[in-house]
Length: 186
Image (tube, rainbow, N blue to C red; front, top):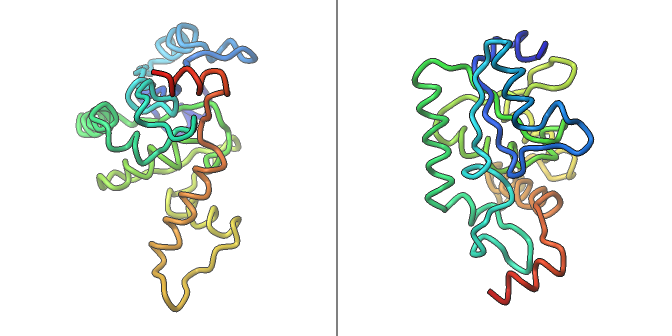
């Protein structure tokens, strides 16, 4: 709550597909919503629209979610529109998921990427309160993956596309074998 107050957040958009925590019950949807309300901060659940665990079986390949497929769904676009509408109404929004490190979470690799494409600036709030622009975060990702700044045959955008794809492959939700078998069976 202190970080939200420090950055003058007026509404929290919960982008977790499953809005509860076994280990941190204060982050369970109902408890979180109540605590935010008491702090004067709105709560919006967008996990159906912007979550990383789509119920749409066409968003999976070999049991692993594909972010580009999620991003093409009408439901995802509706979630982005809700963010655009909230920003347009003057809300100062934060997207919340389960990972502390922005680069380890779909809110950066999937959602923020598309929010930025709408010309809405994105800054990631770190646990120490520090802000990091989305472009800086993705540059940091490319550096951590030892991708070149640019090369003779590829633009910086091509390199960053590789960074997004590589990180998605590392962090994207995968169904367990039993669930994947049921999903493939229909």
